[in-house]
Length: 592
Image 1 (tube, one colour):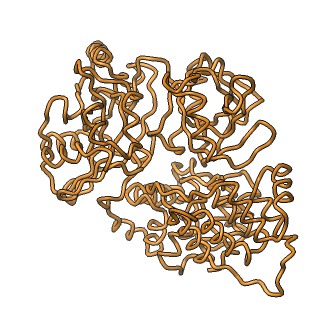
Image 2 (image 1 turned 180 degrees about the vertical axis):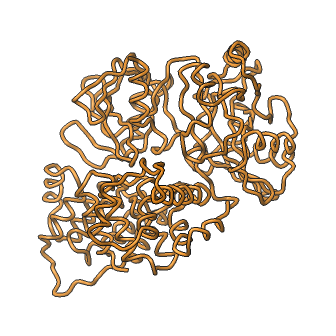
Image 3 (image 1 turned 30 degrees about the vertical axis):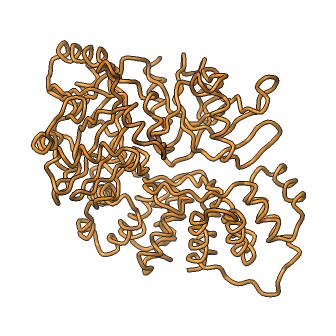
């Protein structure tokens, strides 16, 4: 398949901010271009539609920095580096710089070869494989091979994707609806286009037979994705009919997105939304783990779907000795344990997540307790559609608990508010954040905040936001990034600014997360500079406390934070899990 076809789709997607228009363009592309493509090409397409080379559950990075992109554009275009850097300062987007440079390149050839999608993907995938001395030069050469034959528009998107800065604003709901329209909704004529543009998936619950048909298909597609965690697999099966989606099964070793939980206003709110009785469990201040057991092989994923098996050898041992199952997928929380037997706060043990060396030493210095609270798969059976009560029963049947080592999350089931409040006080007393309230007859819904469970915390709700810009400081803070623009996310993955934060960071590294530490994390992620301000890849998630949420026309979210304060680095969070604009709307109304 020609890469040009995907680039033409990119151009249409970037020409509109309307989700339904994006849905139409993707649906038409899928119908016209991909219906007969093999599974390998489908996989590439669905990854690159979202500006990715590797799936969400693969933590491999391309490792291609802005300076390398400048070198590639300079070499491929025959223009001077100073000219490229000048355009970068002017345009603030190296993708646009590449487009401009390749349209003016001096070393133009009489014939240009068409670039295939597979060639682009293959070269970009090889970037992550380059290691050791000379690896940066080899990476630049791989990108040069593509740019030399690329059209200006193709060059623009090649550079954007190697910098991991596509930001196409394509969320799971858009891809799901696009698959529905491309396969199940008839021919592509003017009326059909208007049908898409005038119809939103939020209306699928209407009572007409047509709406019922749409709703059933949409639910089936979403259920299939919840299991596959890969839209290319869903599309490939859906082409064979809706019944073929039932052939998709969970795969041990391939993680699912974890189920997320909205915040309850209070216990009355929790009971109203979840029903009576419901389960209440400790909300541990640890880091989420999804554990895959296949015989004696144990693989551990974070909530970001990063693999951290080697960092936690004691968990591998605990699972093999205390879980009576040949195969299973468990949802759990690893919590630090102090010498006094009390739980330690998340920040005390977060360093274990990325540590590659001295693992044995950390196991002794920062011991953890594994608290298992859900099961998704057990000995060949997918459990996510079973009720929570049945999943909990399955857990109790396979786990041998050991105090301060491996446990099932502490729980009560009640319909009495006073009883729930006493359990809440107990949770706080031993060092937990609060409680999780869970609906007893609810399934497990990967990646969604659907009201099957709610969190009840003992403190004002903080926000998890991603840094997208930063500014260099002056005086004694010169050389450090000291002011950080943070963003939330809308339903299609578009990042929306909500303010700037600098308060709460430390001057010295030994005091906690400092300006220097955050600067070192952000510098490799810089994709553009303008005076003292830099734009960075949205990778670093931070927890923000605040006094009040205010309406604002200054920021694209429509909100601003009064007295924002840095609380913690959230290395366990992915960009897909940051605070959403819908949640901010809810917080604002509650505040009012």
